[in-house]
Amino acid sequence: MGLMSKILGGGQSRTAEDYVELDLDDASASSAEAAMQVHIAEVNDQADAIDIKDAVYDGDIVIADITRLRTSDSTVEHIVDELRQVAQEVDGDIVRKGDDQIIITPTGVHISREKLGQRV
Image (cartoon, rainbow, N blue to C red; front, top):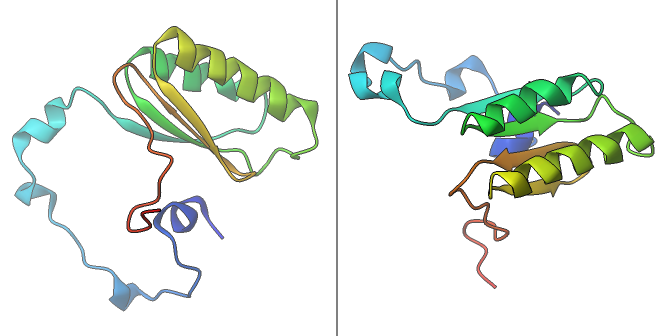
C-alpha cells in the first residue's frame, strides 16, 4: 500500500475512472504564492533527514515515509529523535503514524491526535 493510499485511506483497488482530472488554470493565482507547502519525503537513511529539517525550518509541513527503514533499526529512532528536536526548536509538532509515517509541522501548526469523523 502506497503512502498516499495510507494518508487518504482505503485499501480497495482504484481505477482511472475513480479520478477526475483537475485543470490547474481553475486554481487561483494566489496558490503560487502560498506561505507554506506540504512536502512528501521518503527516508532511506540519515542524510534524508537533512532535507526534512530544512523544510521544517523554512516553515513547511513534511510527511515522511519511513517504510524503507527497518523499524527495529536504531537509525529510525535516531532520525525520529532529530526530527522531534527540530519540531521543538521551531515550536511545531510531530506525530509518528504507525511504523511507516512521520508528520512534522512548523511554528503555529498543531497536528490533531483525533481522526476526523471519530469523536470520542
